[in-house]
Length: 476
Image 1 (tube, rainbow, N blue to C red):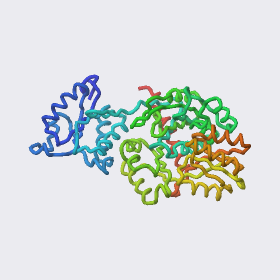
Image 2 (image 1 turned 45 degrees about the vertical axis):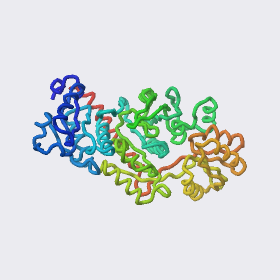
Image 3 (image 1 turned 180 degrees about the vertical axis):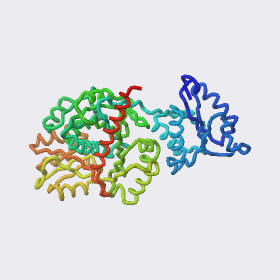
C-alpha cells in the first residue's frame, strides 16, 4: 500500500478495538481517527458483549479495515499469537508509525495497556490513547563505529559498575585496535560534553577537577579512572517513562565520539533514562531488590523488549533469595523467551593493594549489603576493615564517618560516586592518609561467563554495523 492509498501524508496507524463497544460506535470513532491518521489495520483484543449478532469471521466487513485477532494479553502477550506479538507484526507488515487505542476496560486493564504500549514503542511506533500519548525518543545512529548501549531499570541498580566492567572487558578485546570510548550521561555531568582521557588519571587529577567546580565523581570520571578508557561526559535532567530525558547534551557527546578513534562506543544511560543512540546492541541492568513491576511491568517491559542481554544485580540476601531470583528471570523470559539473563552480585575490587592495611571503606551500597562486601575485602584482598560506611551519598553522616576514619584507618578505600572526591578524598589528603579507589565487580552467581557474553555481543554489534554500512553504500 502506498502512502497515497493509506491516506496521503497522514501517519499510518494500527487501531486497537474490542467487542465491549458496539460496532457503530467504533466505526464513528474511526471516522474521527481518519482526520489525524490513516488507519491501515485493526487489532481485535477480545470482548464480545456488544458483538452478539456479529460473525467473528466477518470483522473486516464490520469495521471496514483488515482485522487481526489477538491471543493472550497477559503472561503470553509476547509469545507467538499473543497481543503484543501480533501488534508488532502488524506494525511491521503495514509499515505503520502509530498505534491508536480505541479500547478500554475491561479488555485493557492498566497492566495490559502498558504491555501494548511497550510493544509499540519497542517497534518505533507512537502509542496514542484518549488522553495520553507515548512516543519513542529519536535515536541517533553513529556513522563511523558501532555502539553498545548500557541501560538500566532505575537508579542504584549498579549500571555504572556494569558499564565499567563492559569497558574493561572490551578494552582488553580491542587493545591491539583502536580501543573503546565511553559516552556517559548523568545528573552531574558538564554543561558541554567533556573528553576525559583514561589511563594515568588518579586522585590528584580528580581533586583538581573538583576544586575547579566539576563533579569529579560523575560517571565519566569513574569510567575513565576505573576502566582506564577515554570517556565523554554528558549531562541530562528529567526522565520520562519511556526513557527520554527532558533536557540533555548527549547528542553533542555522540558527535564527539564519532571523531575519536575507537573500535566501539559504549553509551551509558542514567538511572532509567535511555541514551538517544541507535545502538547495535543493548545491555539492560536491573536490580533484584527493585519491585518486580519495575522490571517486567509498566515500561520495564519496553526495556526488556529492546535488550540483548540482562544483567540482574544484587541477587543475594537480604535483597533476593534463589526463589525470587528465579521468578524474576521467569518474568523477563515471559516477555522475551530468548533473552539471556545473568544473575550477579557485586564485590569490591580495590585498584591498588590493601593487604595488611587498616582500611576505612566508603560505598553507596545499602547498609544491609555491607557485611558480604566487608568479608570479601578481608578474605580476598587481605584488608583489615576498621570502618565501613554506606553514607557516600549522605554528606552529614559521611563527614562524621571520615572524621572517625582519620583516627582509626591508614587507608581510605572509596567508590568514585557522590561525595567521594569533595569529602572523602579531601579528608584523606588533610589527614595524610592513602586513598585507594574501589570498583564494584559484577560476579555471576550461576556460573555464567559474563565476559565472554559481552565479547560475543560486541562482535555482533560490529557485524551488524558493517552490514548496515554496506547496505547504505550499495547503489540501489
